[in-house]
Length: 468
Image 1 (cartoon, helix red, strand yellow):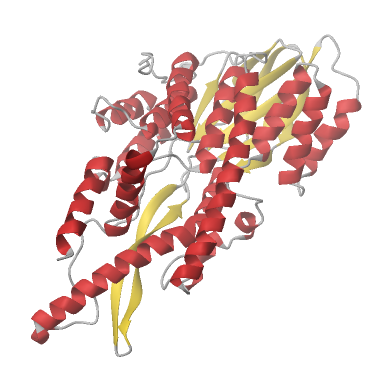
Image 2 (image 1 turned 90 degrees about the horizontal axis):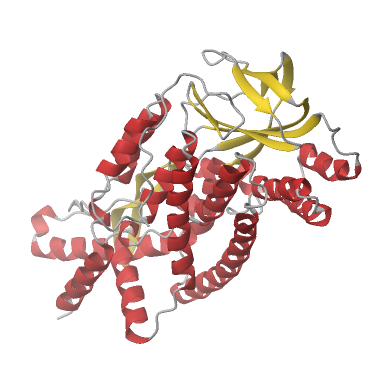
């Protein structure tokens, strides 16, 4: 008698979620990022379009497209795509459906997740992606010296952080109540074969949370300092220091606020190099033992997400400006942010996975009763939908490295101290305060914004604006 309602709920969940359960986003983005690391941004854009043929584009389409266009310094179109993504996030944050529709949407989403997997959830974007989106939008504007225009994105970043903090607090309270109701549930450390060490790495555990970025707040501080608003600049630097108290470079920015400004023929330059790509989100199966009664335990293979960091972009710690070595500070790592986010999300992921494990174990027990000769204590029926959600913003830069320099206004030569990208870049410094922004994929370097004198290299030619 209970089979029919469950089937109906499953159908509702699938209809609400479209074709998410069938999409292999990890494979799609492997193809796309391969083109990026070869320097073929046009090819990467073409793949994004090919993998999103439907008229109603999802959030990830705009996130990925904006990142690729930004790397190619097609900044107006990049901003169009990212503004569309930002509006989608804002509308979902502000949406407040009521009554039966709210219940149906939430019920269908949760039941689809429990009966199949997390891929049935509408992709809302992870908290760190939402914060990094407005940070990257601000960086686009600063790359063309639009310090006044960047205020809105800085404000939005701070407001979004506050909203996420409130949502997280409620989420933790709900998780605690659910844990009390369900009794003891496994911890991710108990998952056999799961790569626990990634989530327990010191650089992950030491983060205050998975969504706040010292880089975002430092960038705000630098912007307000350029605008002559020293109190707001000090606040931005203090927030960055609070997030990364182990970083003397941040503390020097706060101290230097009281020092004399650059001379008329000098520029206070913030060099920003964003390297690599955000980690992939892959799926790993873990055996979950389910105790159905005192004498019967059936093991169900259940999928869990695991982060796979970018391994193709080399690390570097310094660059050369006019022949002088300049040390770089890694101020942000999206890999660490994503690991911390996954670590914090694991209790809820495990709770949903346990429901599916129980359903699979019950199904196996019923099959054992029907066919005792082939009885098994391990779930034998392969479920093609049992896979972790692999969607995540892959074209987002991973590491952000910074240096702050005093340079004479005029032309300067910039080099990476590694092969094969040790050829010179020419840059023009002509502002009192200026951002120099570069993107690095494997052995490819792309200059972003108006400061660099163009070199002959492959850049995107698709400059059509994102859909409004």
